[in-house]
Image (cartoon, rainbow, N blue to C red):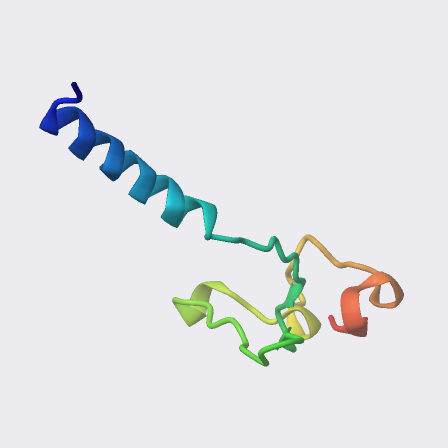
Length: 76
């Protein structure tokens, strides 16, 4: 004879597995450019506070100076 507690526990587990089995995910990798933003959504990053960040193509004191020809979307 199956106890009511066992039957309830089994029903709960089956309910959980039913919902977990129907979930799906897709990994997406995007390059978010500091000048042009997300090429899919068009969202551009906002850097804050503004006095401690400079956009790449106008930064004269930046240590990192990537080669324009090798940058994503040829942005600086």
